[in-house]
Amino acid sequence: MQTQTVNIFRARKAAAPASPSGTARRWSVDEVVELFKLPFADLLYHAQQIHREHFDPNAVQLSTLLSVKSGGCSEDCGYCPQSAFHSAGVEDQAMLQLKTVVQAARAAQEKGADRFCMGAAWREPSDAELASVVEMVKAVRDLGMETCATLGMLREEHVAQLRAAGLDYYNHNLDTAPEFYGEIITTRDYQDRLDTLERVRRAGINICSGGIVGMGETLAQRAGLIAQLANLDPYPESVPINNLVKVEGTPLENTPDLDPLDFVRTVAVARITMPKARVRLSAGRQQMSDAVQALCFLAGANSMFYGDQLLTTGNPDIEHDRALLDKLGMYPVAENK
Ligand code: SAM
Ligand code: DTB
Ligand code: SF4
Image (cartoon, rainbow, N blue to C red; front, side, top):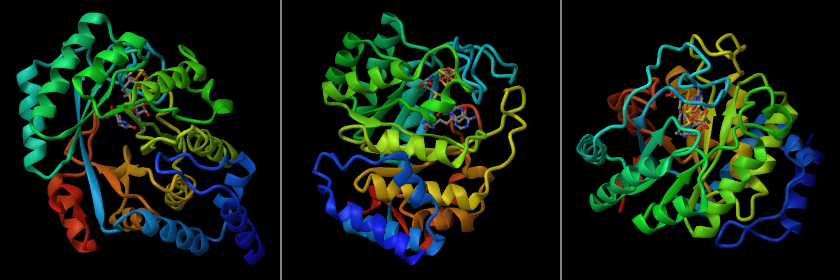
């Protein structure tokens, strides 16, 4: 086992170091599998070393989510309560008013969030829908918060409009490995997602892209997702790692639980392969103990979704999260400027 550890990291050192823009060496899926198989202590030690080379290990970036348009989505993503193909009880709702969005952003900022992420249950926005989101982005930016949006696939002109509005990040997840993708989503393909990411990257908007674990994927498929993300050139600035939230009425509601230590391993492998990215604890924290979350921070997580709601499902209470950060001696980046 010791030999294996040395080899993996020798390979890493021999390769070109990450550039300031997050360009790094290419990772084969086999190499990423080897990382996953390291003894737990070795894996966390290496992740922690890399984390400390690039970040203050006690500062955590806090993003608050708001669903600006919920339900009735025309995609069939097997995990998602907002798909019109499933019966998870999320109604097709109208888009929120601008003032409601600004109110929510201001409240999140007062609670210590530095980034506000607006999500919509769309395959892709129409011109009119995009125009409304542009107004939301401008208004949230005027509060002095970083902005993020997740609206599905984007055409060139929509990317340009978001860029002109000053959007800081666009979230669009690869979700899983290409080999497993077709078992989860059939209404759009992997290449569609890569194409949207490419357009966003070319426009100069930061990329937030990650995936979901615990959907019944194999270890090699979990490694395949990380390899895909790490091999984007440059890799995403922000990498949300979601643990499947099993919502009743979705096809994945009865998927067996992922071992929490495998979630921690995924975070560590993301940190090692994408050294300068913000690795975010995303969906699934409400079902996770404080001890597992603490291990995730040790493994290199330095961001989380913060606020009592994700999009349509719950998240730990703000009070609980603040108590957890205090217990760990950690602080939000917004309060450490
Ligand atoms: N409709 C847009 C899209 O799919 O890109 C934006 C919103 S969509 C809800 C954003 C992401 O939320 C998905 O890509 C998926 O990674 C995550 N997500 C949705 N439902 C989830 C669940 N039940 N558990 C974990 N993550 C989930
Ligand atoms: C991401 O990777 N996870 C967030 C955000 N990006 C948009 C969404 C999680 C959604 C969990 C299910 C729900 O609340 O509807
Ligand atoms: Fe629609 Fe996004 Fe949910 Fe897929 S993940 S069903 S695209 S809201």
